[in-house]
Length: 237
Length: 249
Ligand code: HEM
Ligand code: FES
Image (cartoon, rainbow over all chains, first blue to last red):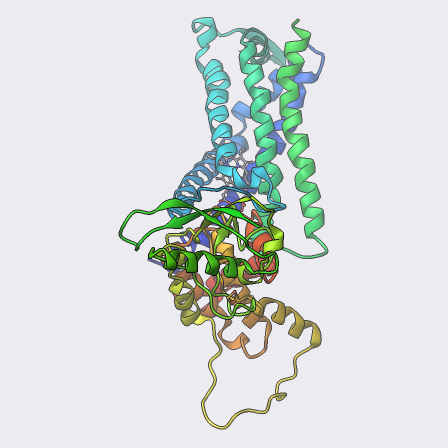
């Protein structure tokens, strides 16, 4: 094996992959969450549909999509490998279980919160990617809308309508979304600051700030995503 | 005081083990936890039964030989060694579970005794500084700043007991390995070999079958010598920069 593959498959190397891909996924959540704020603009979905057009046609976004799939792929693959290795390191557990003082529940259950996020992710893709491309809810007759692109109008798929229908009619999807976001928050509360320690970045001056930023992110991002299904659920009542 | 004990009994690494219940009577509060087990063993010997095997040596909290997971926590409810844990920390009539360190890399020898040679092999792989033999060198020939000497000493207080491994949900040895890597990387005597040391010790740690670190902090919380988690961050730094810049391809 070359020095690079030896490094990346060592215990510390695998953690580096976890941390790097994890923080990259955090940056994705930021962009995704802020872009989706267009849902809240009270213009019958025009802003959101224009944003959808940009997201589905811009070459930059297409390239970033490849990185995103790879990021998720490496994060999940390495998570499974590490979890298996860590389980194998203790074939026989303790009869009396007690966690040590100061150890958080979510730091000990990153695999569980990660699995919930994964299930959520699959559901999310089925909901929106599949509806956008195949219109399953509409028997293939995807709702269309004219949007004004300044000098001309284009007839595009009405993603706003799809989002609204999913969140209002399949109310259980909304509930599941909100629930998964709680676990995403826990994943980030531990994961964000842990990633910096994995990179060896720990210092009296900066670590308290990193932990605080992590906690703010862990509340803000999931709350932002949870607010979308809640908004449609409540306005649709 | 009287106690109800549940102790892991296993004749050797090949056969199956199980928790066995024992009752001990008239235990003094002043006894150490190991002395309480001595009382139990004398009782068992009198009855012609096999005494419970457990590790101990100095009984002064300095050698790191004693072990035992007591009610789910390595070295029991306080951050001290089992030999320095006193029976006044328990209540009369209490039920106490006593189990060995659990890790694939620490194979069970008998009852509560596990083989911790994996730690020795990790130290042999790089946890030292090379010096030429000959006449002894002058003690203060290399000046070291007080702050650095103190930090290195904090890392050097590790007694290698393995409580970090026993506490970690991943049975990771990173607190132990990082304490030695950090201690030597901080000192001028350790700097010439720091890259080779970080690479070799981490490789040996992985080969022994210890898990990776999730930064839960259980290791530092249970360490009888209060070794800090910042050692692990320092090891990550040492290892990553060694891998990126060393001549070993
Ligand atoms: C948007 C989604 C996700 C984000 C933003 C994210 C973020 C992170 C971050 C920042 C870390 C910390 C890395 C470190 O400690 O060095 C982490 C760790 C982890 N992630 Fe994720 N993650 C996501 C999805 C997932 C999924 C889908 C899984 C599982 C299938 C998963 C499983 C794990 C596990 C097991 C760890 C801990 C590894 C360890 O320290 O032992 N994550 N994640
Ligand atoms: S027996 Fe030496 S530290 Fe406990």
